[in-house]
Length: 461
Picture 1 (cartoon, rainbow, N blue to C red):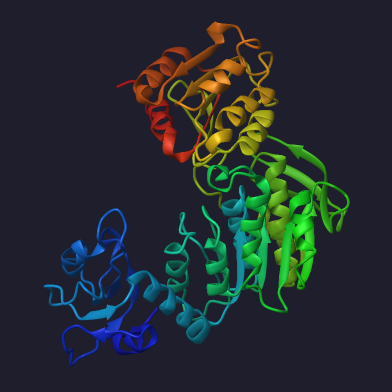
Picture 2 (tube, rainbow, N blue to C red):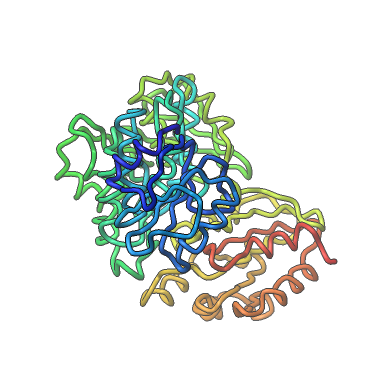
């Protein structure tokens, strides 16, 4: 991004708090002073802290200018100040202008209860074989992250692959209308955020909002194995393609061979080609199918898609294998969790070769609301003491799973630790795990199992 401050002021309808005879050139945007680069425009977001409190830090970090919300101006700083009614709205207005008037790339928007980040990474890798692609970084997938992703584009960007998350109705509607996607993708409907939506039907309704900004000649790609999406897709007038594991989809997988670090499969469309992804699990095959359909929309040849998927970069902490201090293999999936994903990972984990014991470390799945106890208990169906010998449960909600396992596991093989006792969990695991064991960790990010993972990697102090 490179724009004169005077142009930005015009685009967002701002005025200067203090007359500024020289309009500097802005080379980026930041809302976090720790990530601000010299030349950036600072956007003070109103969150847990008032972003205006950090304008001084932004000045020290080399900011070129700052937005200031009306009512705060003028702020005591030498920075040029653009007064706006709402800095977040101004950020979105600037992003939309930059997207449409400065770059105008094709846009692929991806959402889903699970798999959106992996699908984004796969899609970007496939499209990058032929186009200059920018994709969402980290978890920049909300009303702040999406405009930040847009504004990070080079002007020669040909395709923007943008991940979209949501935790309330109307959020995807705004994001979709912001980017006006050429392709909209829904990976699946799970139980994530059911605390706020109450039913999977309402989650599906909210996910379908990603099509609200879909261009008239756009394409809607969705998981055809999900009846809730098939029902709702009947009302979409744009072209549609389905993917999944069932043969009634436009593109489906067959002959899936899953391993610890990769999964191989064939496709209905090109039966003579064998595809491979550097990840475990059938659910990741479904994500690959979505990415493949996007690739074909952009005329990527099947052989190029095959090569791109084989070695695409996998986002950290999503079904990632690491080695613990005792030499034990650890399957880390600590970024997020819901019942569908947890059961899927456990089912695969139970089949991996192991000379010792398989040990599952499971933490709370958050945002499940009134259904939390029942959904945590439902994970018991994916735990078999003959295949997963020991289960460590961590958190306050997951005690329902402990109770559900009472008739299935002997008491000495189910170990429970409240959320306040993470250190005790770490000590117990370090004392219990040996070289030949196979370990997996999965929980919602709010449980911070990454700290447990780090302790197991580094070993006792």
